[in-house]
Image 1 (tube, helix red, strand yellow):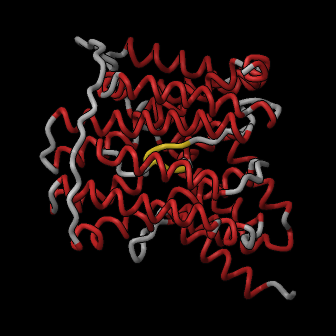
Image 2 (cartoon, rainbow, N blue to C red):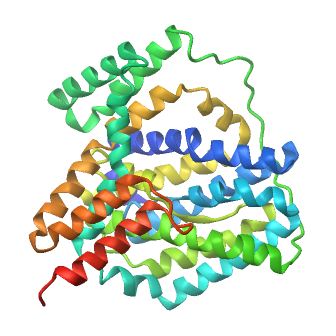
Length: 387
């Protein structure tokens, strides 16, 4: 804790807050939609939000302190998207049972270290290419948003460029402030009657069915592995943190198991928000970026305790503001990934295949673009390498 205080920086706190905003403005919206389609009560929905944020907060705090790296954990975004179609088809009790089975599979993979064996065989260019492909859309969206709201976007972009020249470590702070002020003055942010209230977790007794195991557990495990853990590990390795996955998967798997009866579909390693906290904007010294992971863990826990109230607050932010803010904040991480890919000259073409596949956003055979980026980039590498 003493080193945590000594290593604290404003830039790490800003990165953590930005990661929280992106989490609340993006994946949580999918969860709320899935809960609505499944006909869940407000109490069960609030419990679900409580479980994923408290689980993400505690695991992120613990792992970041333990490994001295910005280990960012979150709920499975592709898993939530999967539940949009599967959750309405089964009872919530069966879904809870399926979550538990998925958590047990993740724990088993973590204990055996199977993912580490795969990650060691992925060339840096392929990992970095996949990482850059994930971030590509977020950078492009900054400029694609100009026709819709030119004043807001150009103002944020101008402030970002000037701030990078004057105080690069804190460039995103004035961008956040200017964008928020413009959005508020233009009437896009309406606070309304928001009041803080503590969330009340609701325990749901699981029931078991082969339909739920086959239809939910296995697909949920696959999309969480390919869309979250492989992407998250690649981001950590590309950012200079050669951590192993077994401890991370075991801890997040255990918390997924414990919190499943309260609605958590999966607690896992994050990808997009990890890029925000592992990049140079979090801190110029990579050894001190773990503070961003610790702070984000605290912020996630607080958000979980107040449940859907804080989520509703963050959801008031305009979509354009959130998209531009995320895109600008990820420019540093995108640049670092491109540098790693180019430096691995022997595998550069394989890295480009991984980059293009991941940037395509395709979903094929139920698996997302990050998985296909690694898979196709790896196959290309096997074919092209002479040794």
